[in-house]
Image (cartoon, rainbow, N blue to C red):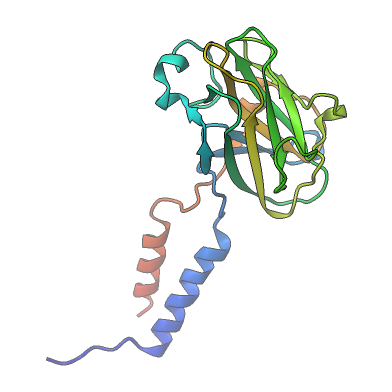
Length: 224
């Protein structure tokens, strides 16, 4: 049987095509997000339930009984529920800009107000070490809230061009007093977001668009 070998030219073109995919496609760890350019800035909108890693907090799909008691509508497909204080959820995303960051969260609770969350951008410090914002809840009705005592809800830490990380951590939560988180927004410009702003934001591209690799491979083979 005659052996078939890959030509050097074909091999080089194949590697070049695969490298192009690596460098061109977005590499956000979050699976779904939205982006906008309001107030002449850049914003990313991320579902709190779309975490990369978590401990002690659960998505609504894992706490269906509690999730069913929350007020609707949610802006995203699922929400984050904290049944006890502590725990965390981590997120990773890509930013095209660097500089000041302003963070807002759409939050609620089962207590009637008085619960809160830490949210921290690009810091390895524990949530209450000074690098975080404290976002208060105001009861069962979902509302957009910014950092407590932080003008314009400016993060103590900045956005980076490229990969960024966010950690959310409940400050207070207990049985019957659960804290709820729907979606958070990170912006390069200060303003208070609305539900309508989120709805108008464009959905981000998937990390690997369906069929993209197959299409590229087919195109390479047709060259030979």
